[in-house]
Image (cartoon, rainbow, N blue to C red; front, side):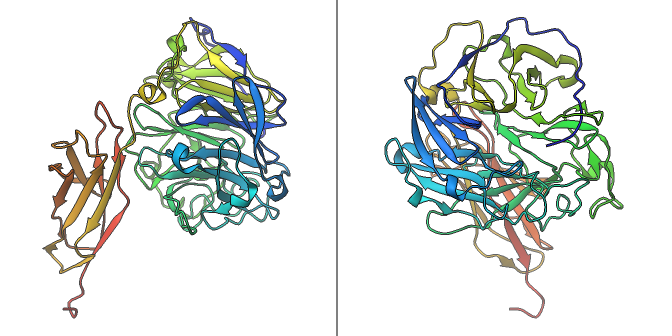
Length: 467
């Protein structure tokens, strides 16, 4: 994924060391692990070759197999899955894999009981061409706090982003994409974030909804990027104008004439001096039981080094430390629906990370602390007479206990105003339309629900000759 021998800060180890407990066994090139949303003891282990194994009560059994459709050359393969939040009812789950021509597929399968027939596989977005190089695919799928499916893609491979994808808003490579999968047809995802090189692993903080991205560097820096919830669209993380906090290798489209303020710089980075191997493996904000003083810290590692490390989001560089665990060929971290954390070795083992405390998982919905929240938005008319006011309606769900909660309207990144939800959890806004404007509506987190952000809504002023 990247060349260079890793140099890490030498810091004190964790005061309460983690231990690694093997989960199941006999996996072939495991690359990701997750769980049933309502049963954290029902784990799904993704194997790069195209198979998924179900692990429950110590037993490992086949769950799904699409190996005949998956190319595994270089960094290709079945790279991750994401289970629909309503998986127990619908059986739907989503897969990120590479096809015969190296193209990126995001597919859907439907499980019946303890297996998913290969015949249920279908694409949910149009395949993304990736024709030239066989590296930098990204590879992560995660459902966000808004219920959308988020997808990470690499810049197309090679060095210096030779194909100039990361800074192109019209390219789907070098991005975080977002889509609400249609159950019957393909949907074109929107570009949510750009300026990424190879965001192999990203995650959402299960408590706050904040977004954390591990973006693999080239020769100088490995970086961890961040977006506070509600995660805004359009953030540019800088590649290849910058590599981490340093000037990047190429004056690409979008770099010339730009200012540092146009980009979002890493919250954490470490040196990659350019000889050997280094590739950051992004992890999770620790929120689960049995983690001791790791709770509230961001867990990460490196493919080539294998040390499990963490830092506090309040002071990443000052608090970076080794957690006393080494995982050879570290491919990924994972999180189950209880919040327990896992580490995956591409050599075969999958481990649950356990702290010094004795704790049980309990009800996964209780362990999650906050439930998903959704904001939907609609305009009475998409075209409004210039300098007149449009009418925008917002609805928030679930509705129970939300009456009176504040909802905020945004034009781009500018806050326009806040309204309170009525008895049916809706709110109205009347912004003045002087020019073509794109709006979003957000709702804050509370003691029951995570923060959420709506889709984009564009209103246009009528031309003078129109009536």
